Image (cartoon, rainbow over all chains, first blue to last red; front, top):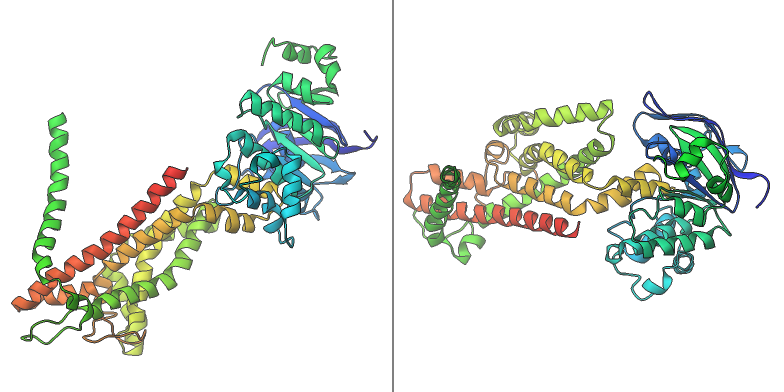
Length: 252
Length: 267
């Protein structure tokens, strides 16, 4: 873990119209580590990760203020194209969303092919699928439809698709919430392997999951960052009583 | 209550069945290979066909597609993706107004713009009128089909660092492809069945024609001519031509339905 944070939110506010979803969030995400973002529904944890790749502002009426630094550079700088930013900051969503008209291989290569990166893509496809621990299961049917995969496989395909463009940061918005326990375990295993190369921010509803995969954990409540620290400390010895109430299951 | 519902169903089915029965029973006896491939013959001679009218209808509908599809589909995609903007509102309002314009008026406008200035009835004028009629329905149907594409796919594509226009072009439209095709086929079926806008634009032509600047025969106008004529032979031909038109339109609609069903099965 290097000293300079990979991502740093400074006084970040986010709004949906007039409703404020994030209030003055200051949070560092260390490089090559996993940060889990936990909190009850509607606390702003999804909004927070969606700010990091500027997906938040795609919602009609959604705005932000404050800043997020990626390697020290402000991602909200006027001369920064959000499209460029999203190539550096990949994202995996709650529901698997493979492109239904493309094959398995084409899905993985989509970020390259549609962006005009010259082919062939076989090597990148294989590498990404291996990283996503899906290669062995699909290597004999790369030209089958992506929809022929199970839900868990589809989610790993989406992870492979995000990895293929070689981002620096990987955002995961409840990536396992639509999956069964076995598929969830595979995704968590995968997160462990991926953190050697990537900076990962994972939103989760599941506190055991946060405890299993994350180096650091941030607890959000009603749009505010209540506490952020090493995962073990958050779960065993939190500084704030609200954190303790939440992680021990008194509310949420 | 059940009896009332049954009655309502019956009331809906009786006209449909009687239309089919009348057209098939009166039209079928005139069917022959010649009817599809030959030119009309002068009154009094036996035989002959409406090959030129069948081809004319297909030709003009194809021309109408060339003009109308890019515009209609483009407008529909725009409405789905940017419909909440000012321009989107204008386009939607225009489509709604256009949808309410009677087809005969579209024909008159096409006559005024594309026939009168050139002193020439033409396939192009007819096709332009048909394209105009296809536009609003096509735009609205395309919009709905594009809106059916889950937002997650759009987000997934944008999150890969693809610009919005590429997301629309390479992810959203291919996903909605079958739905858009359905909208196109329904538009085609509607255009193929139009008479009023062709009456004084493409007029009619007793011979084969493939030139866009010449009058062109069409099934619908041919039926109109035959049915309103004084000859027994013409009446028979009108029925048979009606059957051909019904088969053409029916086949198009059925194809559209088949595509829709496939899409649902896959989703």
